[in-house]
Image (cartoon, rainbow, N blue to C red; front, side, top):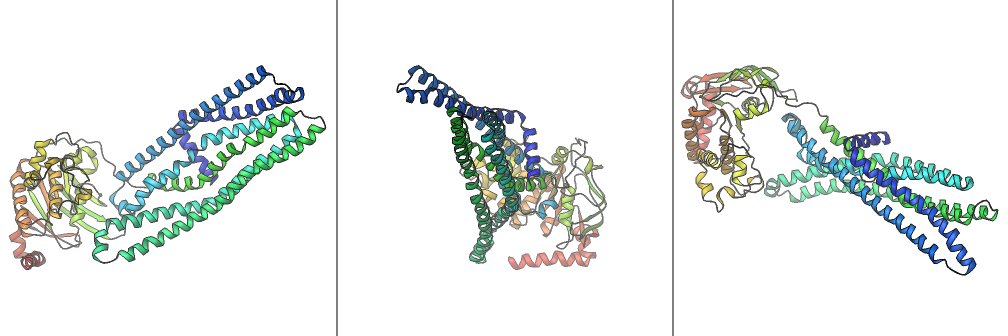
Length: 585
């Protein structure tokens, strides 16, 4: 654990060498002033105070000079402490910000399959608690380094003063290091478990808050509270185990310097009686052992923080080193007008081993609309994900205007293709910010045009603050249909050349859906082709061609009327939805 901790500290020092150098310099200066202060006090006692008592008079000049020297040393100590704390704090928070930025970037780079294997609560815990734990050892690190330098200097000066008193230091310092090593060995597994349990608590909390509607409507409040309490209880017990060990370690670390001071006084009194040392030397050494107690705590703080720091860093590193990312190409596909999309003999299998698509070949001609129809699990949403490179095919090729999607830059792909997912996501921001997304071309005129196409412009115009209205977290102030239309407007505001609708109007009233699809149909020829995952007849009627899938294979393609007349599975599926809609009406 110590070796892993030292590697982590080395990485942090390499990342912020200047701040580390400033903080260590301040710590070394502070330690030097402590050692110097001990010998100055010894000299004052031996040369000023003792003669004053012996002669029953005080030398005012000598006392003034002594006071000035002590004040000067105190001033340097304050300046050194300020430099150390400021630089160490800046170093720690810069590292913290850097780790969080790298983790967030990595989260966004990792493929969708990786996110599906890791809970949102765990990812949130890594970006917050684990990062804080990973950088915590850097706060006491400069003081600990300065303390080591001070210990070497102090031990050397004590041995130079008197080798007998120096033996106390030679026994004390290795004892302190041995105690720290024993502590770290026992603390490391406890901190590892506590850090893992912190992530578990965050997972349950996030799941409970995210599923509040289900929990309330199903009457699961008590059960969910009990589940959360059980995990919190495990974390509590783990932290108590950490605290119990630290509670034993801290007093031992505090008491060893005091034991050393007592030993120095006992031995020093004997050495003084034999004339081997002077009063000044005894006072200096005894005072030095007394003031060592606090700086030595810095080593204890560092060793105490290392196990949790290692645990946090290893969880952070697991994210940064996770395999898999979407590697984009270098081709900037700067083309105007509606795009064409083709799938050429595409296979796709999930990480679980379940094959979803097999030999899929289809085309969305430029300016045309193609509807994907099929039962649940037939691979429709997977095709939509492949079209925007949320995933890549295991075999075959997906092309945009003849170019393999894997050769395009991320910016080029995002500029050309937009996906409106089945489950809409709305940011906790204004209507304008949700639609424009800081895209330079998405000014208010473009925002309103997109809102009109999505059939939600009248509703937005009627809000008290119009485009500046805050919609709440995940759009809680909006209905399901309004959220879907808002996310549709967001996609349209980017003027994509290919628009992919993954059942994106399922929560919209059929009459509103018909108006939306009619507007899209009228505008499609101007700038976008459309691939739509469809269930309702109104949606399917938008399409120039319908592609019917079952079990990951394309069984038929043609117009709606053609498939209705020739494909029994298609007829059963479409009429089932129509019957369901009729019953709902």
